[in-house]
Amino acid sequence: MIYALDSTTIELCLEVFWWAKFRKHKAAVKLHTLLDVRCEIPCSIHVSDGKFHDVNVLDILEFEPEAFYVMDRGYIDWHRLHRIHRAGAFFVVRAKKNLAFERLYSKPVDKSTGLRCDQTIRLKGHYAARDYPDYLRRIKYYNKEHEVTYVYLTNHFDAKPMEIATLYLNRWKVEIFFKWVKQHLRIKRFWGESANAVKTQIWIAVCTFVLVAILKHRLKTPHSLNEMLQILSVSAFDKTPINQLFMKIKNKNQDPPISNQLDFFD
Image (cartoon, rainbow, N blue to C red; front, side):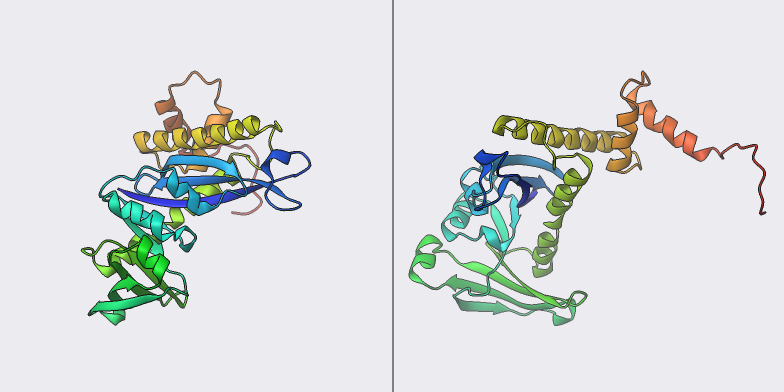
């Protein structure tokens, strides 16, 4: 199993949503989401106020043995990452620029693929070494297309270095999930002002996404999630079975339009 962990912020009006104080003059809520990369469906979502730091969500999650957890550098906390390691799970996280480490061993890499190094390291510093006493794997990868160098840290030593770099690319799927939910499920404006009302509307949006995604997977329809959502919204009172609904729409789109209007141009 491969999971991508990230959060998104939904800004609110502080005068109305006073309970969700984020900054001095702003309010916000955060959606901390653990996304299953293979089916692109969220497995866990925690809704918090804007002050809740992203790394604190690692204290809430239960880690699955042998699973991969892909995170950005904002989730670097050596004590919490070592908890993932002790649970028998694996993590892939971007390293910070000020990482203090000692190189113990380097494996040869093919630099034509963009790889720059594959190292076994040990953390330096009293607190870092205390919180994470085991070895780590450090992989540096250069993306020629965007001219950016990435440095990844992981506790998995058997996978190929390009596989680790590819795993991290899957983290963008959770960003796509956030973008889709915000654009198509209308969670920027809320009907209620209480914390319960905001969380209820967010959960309704998430449940809608999950149901449409499951429907797409089971029907194996070529329609996008947005197209399916539009079809369902205009067919709420249609008595046609749902598996036939999308076939009927598809057949209608395939028929040429019939019009009595004359054409000015051939």
